[in-house]
Image (cartoon, rainbow, N blue to C red; front, side, top):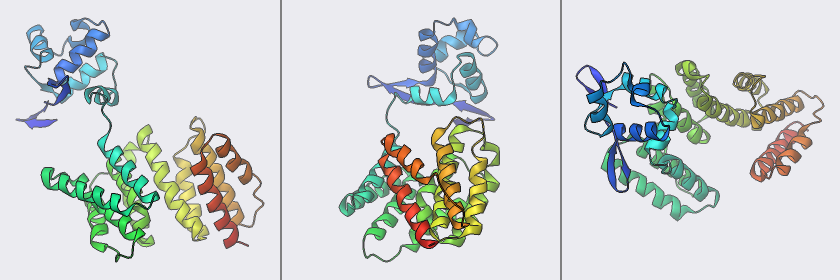
Length: 304
């Protein structure tokens, strides 16, 4: 979406068979596939001549009208974005997956190549996300080698997060991915800012999922350090992201796992930990099971 005068106009395109498609053309295809008449979708929004121009890709519409059209099509913004992208893979998710796999495989040359590619993308587009990718990848490279800690790279991410007046999904993911490189006091400070800046989005499922991941990772750091006070603080916040009626099984199981670990720190009898790890193994979630086993061993050793 871009500004035109005082209105926000929708003016984007997608590839279809090598031909650029306007948003109106995509919406027209969706309307026809749903067997909906023009008046059922556009009544009170666009005139008949305007509908024809819009669906042929010859004109744009405002963001407000675009959202009304989506509502009349019974289509969410997320669904439209997926269809509009031509079902192509999310490049950001692909990059994160690529550098994560390279890091766990300790493939330093691959990380170096991904960092170079990200910096080239930034030089070509000036999109800050590519600079953030490059900074995280450089941090990962340093973690696997004897390179000095790159404070400058961490500052790129830290300064960006502190400068954001409102946090959205991107900022949550960025903080989660860079979390391990922040000193403890910075983790607490950035997390406090995140809580302050994104309360209005807390009920959105996508945000709740990423927020659960972020707080879980911070909680793991506190459990590893055997910091009971902060573990209780972050567990309390984590619990608030999952309601009793929520059907997200993984989140409920991890909540129970963390609760049992805190019980060990409080010298209480924790009986369910082995069953939880066994459950993850039965579900072929080997990486999660292994991570839980490692954390359990650490907490037990700290409280032996």
